[in-house]
Length: 382
Image (cartoon, rainbow, N blue to C red; front, side, top):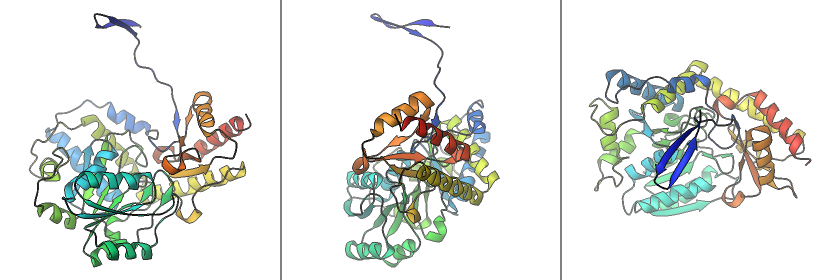
């Protein structure tokens, strides 16, 4: 039923109950959430210090350790999007003057460098063309040259669809006494990750991609080495909201009020993580790999080429070269308006050159690939 609502003395709006189109979200995120996750969001909220809700928080921590393959005690969900968790890693371990070496292979490496600079770091960057990755030898040379306090790498570069190999990097960082920070925003849940085995000290992610959950509750973890640096700070963490010395008093055994948690978002995250545990994280990795290989072959079958070398492609996000003479934005718009399918465009150096196709979480299914390919075959000839 339409209602007329008075906003102020000069404006009246006619409003109906919220109604939005149903889209298949095959862009770089968000992805469609599992129906069970959406149902969990409808659970009546509890108080943020209710023992029953604190038990949910404990389950989230245990499940995050499982999907990340870590035993880190300080593993939580930040109340915010993935960018908040990204900033939390920088805010807690970077002090003015610290040398932060950032490996830039795309848009989000640049964002890490920007954030570190805002916290007073002496930021050094090494770069590769967008779509390529660093070799271990290249990283070794850079670490030897710059002697950083922190080496920051993007494991899954959402802007390019490239996956940075991490085997041996943790050992390298320990050899030179620096912390290893990685971005797993587009890899958690869909790409093999072994934080402890790889020697990762700080990691963050988001809820709306491989975990198959709406955005708003973002995984964050610190190794004991990183916690030790936090405890030895000469200055307070500059960001109060993301200060882990305060936040962990809420997530840890003390249960001290810090902020009002987004209760229903934590319900959703807990359910999304439970579904991965039920499937088995190794099976989730396998499913993403099998379905993306089906996507790659299907795209090539209709004459499209892919941007990243096969061995470094992400199972969760694929960059597709826009054919010469094709208006990439127009195609994406047609897919959205005529077929209710969302795909993404290129960022930064790849703007106008690629589409970004996500196949993440609940959306990583062959029937979604078939639907996209069928739609592309209809709109591309136009």
